[in-house]
Length: 141
Image (cartoon, rainbow, N blue to C red; front, side, top):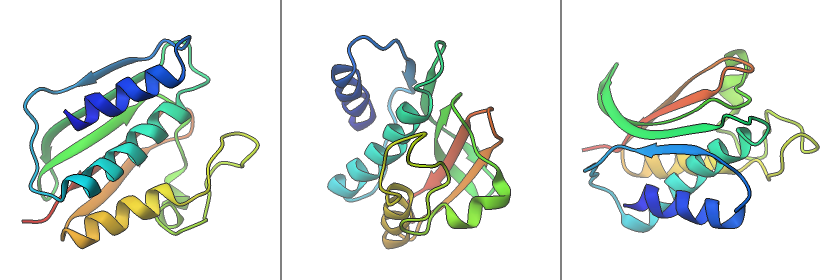
């Protein structure tokens, strides 16, 4: 429900933009609701932002079995990134894309990482330039 609410807010903010998004039904997590909202707002907001240049923008939120157990994911078909630079993704103010390309402060993914750390969770990313990105994450037990 949180993911759907966030995506509807993003649609309201850009009513002329067509983004095909899906949210798997029935997803649940044991996490602080406000922090989970902030985490999803950052990940889905990034997906929304980095698909901005695609006429066929797609964003998905779901869950699957991951390398270390069950995990959620946010997937997009946007700008993507070079994983050689992945270590700096979760460091505050270390932007991957230039500010002139995409707006932002460079603290969203650092915030996501801190929220997951606080919950004993984990995050990883799969991506390639121009191929979109998938952020896999799990809250701790």
